Every structure is written in C-alpha cells, then in structure tokens.
Length: 320
Image (cartoon, rainbow, N blue to C red; front, side, top):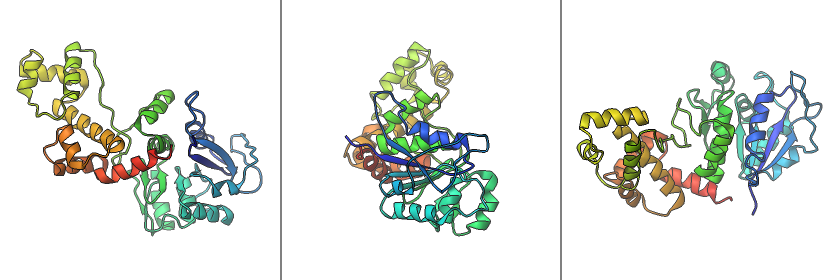
C-alpha cells in the first residue's frame, strides 16, 4: 500500500531543531508501520551546513518536489533574503499540481516570497509579525495561530509549533488514532491550547483515579445521545449533587457540562471521519438537540464547520 511522499527542503545555515522536527515525525517513527516516504532534498546549490556545525549530504535535488505529496520548508535563514528562484518556482509548481506545501516558522517567508500566500491566511513566528506584514502586505497573517491551512498551504508559528503543525499533518493523512500514537511516542500532547482552534482533538480524560467517576464516564460515553442532568447523574453515582460535582471536578479537572461538550464534539469528529451519517444523524447520536446546535458548537471550538472537517479528514485518510 502506497503512503504519502514527503520532501523536506534543506538550505544552508539551517536550524537543526526546525529541520529535525519533520524528519522525525515523517520518518519511521512507529516501528513496523511506515506512514510516509521521506526524502531530504537540497533547496539550493552549495554546502548545507547549520551555524552550529552540522552538515547535510543528500543525493536529492528540487526534482523531488515534482512527485511529492507534501513539501516542507522547515526554516529560512534570513527574512530579508529572497530565496533562489529555482526553489520558489519548484514550490509554485508543486502546489499547482496539487501537493500540500508547508512552511514551518520562518519557512513561511519562503512561501510568501514565492507568491503562494497572496490573499491567503498564514502564520509565522510572532516576533516577526511587523516585518512580515511590511514585506508581504497581501498576506493575511495570523500570529495567534499555532498553525494555519489555506488552500493546501500550511504554515506554522515558531519553534515547538512546528511539532503541532506536523502532528496535524499526520492526523490529516492518517486520522486521529495514528496521530495520537505518534504524539505518545514523542511524549508530547496531541493538542495544545492557545491561539485559534486546532484541528487535532482536545484530549478528554479517559479515566481517573476515582472508581465511581470512571464508572460514570463509561456510562456517559455509552449514552451520549441522551439528555443528562446533574441530579440524575448524582443519583447514578450515589452522591448528593454538591458532592458529585465536587468529585467530578477533582477527578477530571472539568465540569460535567464541559466534559460532556468535549466528549460530544470529539465523538462527532470521529463519526464525521469514519461514517457517511448526515449531520442531523450525528447530532442525534452524540446528544446535540439539533444539527444547528452541533454546527454552532463545532464551529466555535474548531473554527471549521462539520462539513469542512469531514471534507478535510475523510479525503486525507483516503490517501492511505
């Protein structure tokens, strides 16, 4: 079975951290389970050395971009320097034929110099906000987002946000289960709060140290479609309402209402990705009173509609 091909572009004076992130995430990170076909390609002629003394040797050049499903520019050495025209042309050609083109941190500058981000949303390191806006006024820069996708162009904020972005790409291509496995192997969360809503799910506690609460969580997960109120749940847990709410908050770190909302939204994501159910049916299955209510809460949490979510992740998963 074929897997998505990834080309990581190496440039001189590269940042070892930024370069290593996509190489780790899209390399053989899960033993015995090949997720991507990774190639490192030289983005310009001459030596490829970091300022810290690392060097890269690769037999691949920009011709790799002609076939790659995902092209990643993990860094750029100087915002004031225009990259080689050959690199810019190769990125434009890759995007025009349907590839996903990614700029991590200052790699966003390379995509902007290529003209790919004109009239589109993008993200980059917050420290370079004013510089970026001055150089590329036609780009709609969002410095609050950890990462942004707009028309198969994905850009991220600085440093660790590259990890968030790459995990998003794993989720986009292989689904939530694989993305969570990768996150666990990296010993990082599958989602970080901050900035705009992210596509990778907000983790919901699967279990706690409180056996009674664990029993209740299992009951709620098996009955998400029902209407629940605090009095009934307290009775189910054999506690007073006040004691129950205190125990639940202590055990999960969330209110009952907050936990139910997160669980319902997460279940709706799974159903959108893995079934052909209508939005109305999914709303009923996960416990929203109407499709309109699901759409409202989904949009507020993830900044995309349920239909847009399904289009993105069902299409992405089909690549594998």
